Each structure stands twice: as structure tokens, then as C-alpha cells.
Amino acid sequence: MNKIGFNVLAWSAVVSDELLPIIDRLKAIGYDGIECFIGSPDEAAYKRVGEHVRSIGMEATCVFVVGKDENPISESAAVRAKALDRMKWTIDRAHDMQARVICGPFHSAHAVFAHHAPDDREYEWSAGVLRAAGEYAAQANITLALEALNRFECYLCNTMEQLTRLVKTVGQPNVKAMFDTHHANIEEKKFTTAIQSIAPLLAHVHISENDRGTPGDGHVDFDKVFSALAHINYSGWLTIEAFSRNDPDFANSIGVWREYSDPWDIAEGGFKLIRQMCQKHGLDLQKTVNHAL
Image (cartoon, rainbow, N blue to C red):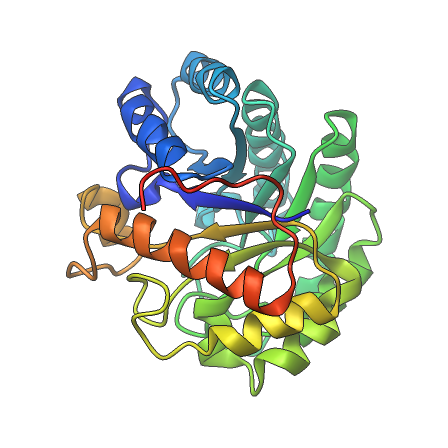
């Protein structure tokens, strides 16, 4: 059964007790879970937030990125070793939250470009790091769901075709793929074809509008997205990822220079859209009850 999640990056990239009232309100709207960015150094906070999430009957998923000093496709073996260390630390923090999915574009450093097309060596380097990370994640029963990003944020994996190549090269059962409607809206020819192609490896889905505002207010064709997901019998998370300038450091790092929608409008409107689309296309929601709308 599908579950509906919301990425709290709309408020903060820091995992702390300040998220607790936000999580409570998301629960009241009807969300099954929240998604947190793993990066802030307070290790104890991950356990506290995870415990709170579970205490109110929700679940957590996680997302993270790597930078140039921990780049899995660096020519430097030392840098690639740092990438693996970072992934293991992230897996430990997700385990603290009792999360079962870590998603994101950590196959390569975010917004770091080599000014050439991705080559075979880079796919092999990335796969080697991810294979070891997947083996480590398996011990915690965590799936690593790799994300393809648009050409302005990444060059290794922009499409489901490239992502399929990488995941198959990794060849580790705990390393799979995710689909993000925002990036696919830029890079894929057709949503249906892209989703069908990644179906055997698909472990996570981000529901994101073309401008990262409220899903359904832009031009992403969510009818086609949900129809394709129903056709492949997708049964994982449907997690909204939308951004704001509430956390200026994070916003600056990903090029968010204006407000798209109020985060609570995104949460309420996006939740309504997902429920409507699931009902329309026959996706089976776990138990979600809309308390606020």
C-alpha cells in the first residue's frame, strides 16, 4: 500500500526539536510520514525526532547529498573513501530514526561539474562506492534510493536511462532508484515511458511541481504520473518535496531565490492532490485519513 509523506526541508534542513510541532501538524493533516535531510551534526537529535515520529504513529524517510570533498566519482581514491564514510554516517543516522529509505543524488557530488559528459570510469567509481554503502545499509534494513537530477544540478544521472545503468552496475539489492517529477519534467520525454523503464528498480517517488511549489498548481501532468505508477503497481512512498527560503543556507545551496507557495498551503494542497490522484487511478493508500481538509 502507498504512503503519503512530506519533506520537512520546506521549513528546515536541520534535524532538531524545532521540527516536532511541524511534524504534529503534518500528522493532523493526514500524512503517514515525514522526510528529513540528514546533514546536521547533532546525532542525538535524530533519535529524539525519530522517537517522536514513531510515538504519534508516523514513519520517517531520509534524504541527503554529498559535496565535492566526498564525491563518489572523484579521480581521488581518498575522496571516494570519504564519500563512503559519509554514506555510512548517514545510514547510521537514518537507523537512529528507524527510517527504511534514504533517497537522494548521492551517486555524485551535487552541483559539481567536470565539464565533460559522464564517462565509464565515473559510473564504475560511483558504483563501487554505492555497492559498499548498500552492503552497509543492508545491515540496518535500509534501502538506498538514488535520484536522477536535472542537468543544472548534476551530470552523472539526469534520466531514468542513466540511473538504470548505474543501479544495475552497482548490483546490490539494497541500492535502488527513485523518481522525482520535478527533475523528470525537465529531463524526460514522457513520464509514462520513464516510469515504466525504471519500474523494476523503483523504490521511492517524490511528488514535486515544476516550480517546487504546491503540487497541482503548475504544469506537471500528475494524471500521467499517477496512471503510470498504478500501471506498474507501485506500492511505495509518495512524498512531496517542495522548497522555500525558510532555511536560507539550504535555499542558497540549491538555488531557491524566491518563495513559491506557503509551506502549509503546499502541505494541504499537495495532500489533497495525492489522495485525489490515488483514488482516480486506483493506487491503494495505506490508511491516510484527512483530519484538516
